[in-house]
Length: 148
Image (cartoon, rainbow, N blue to C red; front, side, top):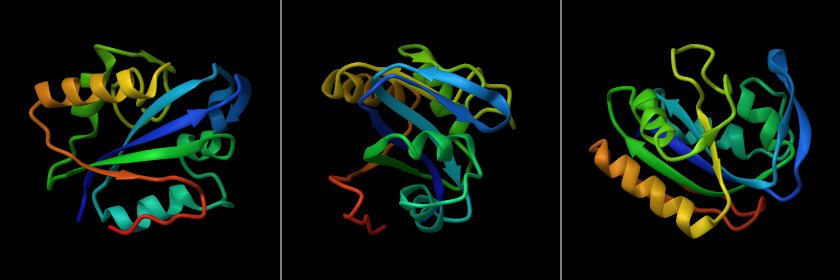
């Protein structure tokens, strides 16, 4: 199964984090939604993101070394919907400019909010308006794996 996805990520303490060529960026304590794509399959891409120890390849890898994934929303599709998702989220959330969007014209692929319930509710509404359907997978800890 392939398509686009949202990693819902929790950062419990605000901090400066080195994000590859973007340099140091301050990330406030918040809940984050990262938009990505896995056009060659979700399983390998998500396994990479969920690894405890990994060599950073994408911007999100640097953040995930400091934060935890609490839920994954999958958007199965044969077309790349990543930018459609990012644009939908841009209308309702603050973003980290340039994060995850070096290969497109989006302002960002990382958005943040402060409440798990209201953030997820806003995401579902925003994405629903864009006409994209999702499957949700909750992750309780780094030890729990997600099968796709």
